[in-house]
Each structure stands twice: as C-alpha cells, then as structure tokens.
Amino acid sequence: MKRRHFIQTAAGVSIIPSAALGNITNHTAPSDKVNLACVGVGHRGGNIAMSLHETGLANIVALCDVDMGAEHTAKVIKAFPNVPRFQDFREMFEKMGDEIEAVSVGTPDFSHFPITMLAMSLGKHVYVEKPMARTFDEVQRMMDGAKKYKVATQMGNQGHSEANYFQFKTWVEHGIIKDVTKVSAHMNNRRRWHSWDPKMQSFPAGQAVPDTMDWDTWLMTARHHDYHKDYHHGQWRCWYEFGMGALGDWGAHTMDTVHEFLDLGLPYEVNPTRLDGHNPFFFPMSSTIEFKFPKRGDMPALDLTWYDGLDNLPPIPKGYGVSGLDPNIPPPSDGKLEEVKLNPGKIIYGKDLTFKGKSHGSTLEIIPEDKAKDMASSLPDIPESSSNHFENFLLACKGEEKCRSSFDIAGPLSQVFALGVLAQRLNAKLIFDRKSKQVTNNPLANLLLTDVAPRKGWEEFYKL
Image (cartoon, rainbow, N blue to C red):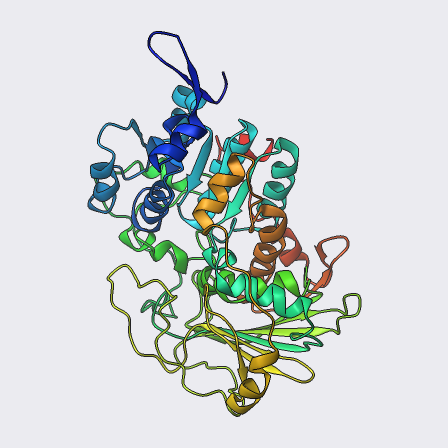
C-alpha cells in the first residue's frame, strides 16, 4: 500500500493498524512517518533538519548539501550516518525520488526556487526557509506551482505557529486590533551586518574552492562568480545577487502577522528614505523603507515602515517601556545574545490603542502599561497551538492539518520583501500596480521583478 498504513505479522495471521501501534507504544510507527529529504544540512538548514526529525513524524531518508563533509554539516551527518548523501539535489531526486515524500530547503535565498520547483513538480511537499525566494517572479511561480501540483507547502517563519500568531488573530477577530493606520517594523542589532567598504566597485577576486564543495551547484541559477569566502556561511545574505538582506531575513518574523491578519497584500508604493552606504553590490548598513497599502474593505489605508541598522531606530511611542532580551528569538550561530537598544519587532498604531511587539512567537503588549492593566480582565482567551511549525508541516503532509504559512499566505509577504529590496537596490521610489503586478514608474525595476535570465543549464526550472 502506498503509505504502508498496516503492519502484518510474520505469520500473516493478523493485521494491526500502525496508528494503533503508535498509540500503545507512545510513538509514531515508522509507517506513519513522512519520508523526508533535507536539502541544506549546515547552519540553519541543519537546524531545520533536526527540528523536523525531533517531531517524531519524519523519517530522514536523504541528505543533500553542496558542501557535504565540511565542518558545518558534520552534526547532521553524525546524527544520520547511514542516510544516503548527495551534493546535487537533481541527482538526489533522480536516484531516490520514489522514496521521498517531502523536502526541507534550508539553503541561501537565491537557491530556494529551483529546489522547490523541482520538488513540487515531482509531487513532493516542501518546507522552505524564509523568504520564499529572491525575486518577485520566482515567488509568484512558487505560489502557482503549489496550486498546480497540490502539495503541502510551508515557509519557515516559525512564529506563525506560536503564541504571537494566535494572539494577533484573536485580537483582530475581537476588535482589539482595529483601525490600524501605521506600523513600524525594525531590526537593529548586529546580526546580518558585516563590515563592507561602501566604495567597493566590484565583486571580490576569486579564491580556491574548498575541497568539500561543489561550487557550480551552489551557484545554481545565479550568474557565474568565482568562489570567495564572503559569499559563503551566511555572508551570501549581504549581496543582492544571493540574498534578501535584513528585510527578507527579519521581516518574516516581525511583519508576518501584521501582513496576514490586516490583509495587506501588496503595496502600491515603496519608498526608500534612508540608505546608508548604498551601492549596487550589497545591502546598505542602515535602511528605512516605507510601504504604502491602500484601504482594504473596512480597514483604513496603512503605512508600514521598515528600519534596519545599528543606528536607525524607529520613533518610540510614549509608554513603550524597556526592550530587554527576548527569549523567543533564537541565538545567532555563535550562541551569543547581546543586550540591544531595541529588540527586533514592531510597533502597531491603531485608532484607540498602540501595541508593542517583538519577534518570532513573542506576544503583543498594549502600551502604555496602565492602559494594558485596565483592559486585562476583558481580553479574550488565546487558543494554544496544536502543533509547532515543523509538526504543522508534517501533519499537513499527512492531511491532518493545514499549513499556517503555506505559499498562498507567505508568498505575498515574500513579494513585499522583493519590492522593498528592489527599492533598496535601485535607491528609487517604486509605484506598483497591485492588479497587474507591475512597477509603473521605473522600467528597470519592472524588469528586475524577474531579474536576469538564469545561468545556462538552469532554465528548465522556470518551465516547471
């Protein structure tokens, strides 16, 4: 049977449903687990693989990483020493496609698209790290592909399965969050900033490719660049050709519930008002970007402003209080959290109330504090999550839940990031037609919704 829902005794006398076996032994029987391939098993990709495994709902059947065997992939390899390993996801699918039911994609932003499109075209469910892809067009193709191939999809903004998600949803439904006209979203600590020379006028000179690495496959659809250490180990996020900067990284953890439950969709105007160290190669050291959204039903027009950079804090409303460390924010790769002037998060301005929010799963607070105390007894109960983000995905693969950050929800949010990055890259205000999905005032920006043609040999993924 396709999912092996029954286990037969060796003697062939009785047939016991595997679900019943799982209930008796307090674990999920192997036949009820999702056969999962993990593409990207170092750094964040490795964390995703382990988190999916720790749910008890997945069989890890394949590991794939272009730098397989390097120090940063060792932990996952050690955890699954007998699982087949690959450096090219195309070879993995060719050799093991029949054994794979779902795929996790924990690779650099620019490489999400080809892996995800091939997986979906083969009928595989996909968990992809945020943001969904690097360009507006790639995100659209992924949204369309999810509908076409009818697979479960989840973007990895894990706060969408935690307390913040359920509180925001409930407070909107009960009219506590209403008539919002302004939101500030911000990320102002050292993570994702690097000491670049703003006068740099070219990409760095090539270096020797590490012995463990398949550099050609790492590049995937991107145009050719010689290997350099400053493209690797997270540094790719700083370059426009490979990453989405702080906005694509942290916007998914600070703007996600605002975007979904206030029904923002796509903006009609994107305006970069501050870009410190702007250049055509890599992201500014500090950015302020204004997104304008029109009236939506009975919701008023809304301006969302993004702030990043160590010295680029948003205006702080009276009664905001102390920021402090946020336990819901995962530590950086070196494990060191630091005190900051302001935690990553958001400030939401409604007609009658102002809300202070942090990042990931952190809940909102009503400010000032005396207002919050006055309302405490009248606030509605918040439902608890039935599953964390990884469980939610795997249960959706089995048809038991619906993904909370599926591509139809996460896609428009990722397209907001793509428009913001275009405005950063070109240092230009963009006027966007929400119906035609075209930039109407800047021909170059409109072309860059799709960006340059894929590298020769990688065109097929845009035909799936």
